Length: 193
Image (tube, rainbow, N blue to C red; front, side):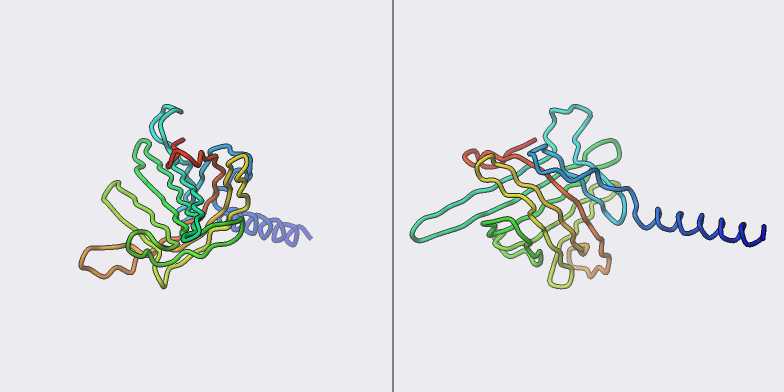
């Protein structure tokens, strides 16, 4: 009986350890209040958007515009986050060409002049590495809140991106996921937080 108890205990310990390893660091609870937060995980490592040690250093840039004329209708959304702290020098950007409402938007190939839904990730240290979504490495952004009265955009995202090398072929692919909760001011262009 003691042997069976020991085996059950060991199995429980192993299952618990495996579960914790698979989850990685959990994201903080997702909010939709305009908290100006941005968290992202790259291949399992969790980061918070942060620049330097001063809380006033800009770490998030958000842009949302609604252009509505008789000839042209557009809702452009772009958000970028930077993690520049100690040995970290990372930037992540998501662009959605037309985002008129909350919902899911696919990410793929970046077209000239940014006229598409895409994402990229730059890791500058220890060497520069650039990763982009493309036709084979795609993702999705789920806008969970779009409040055009109180100017709040919140959402979650997940994408795969391939490393870009000038005149070379790369098979290196990363997985990125995250969440954001930001305020924006529509009349001033890019808002920095």
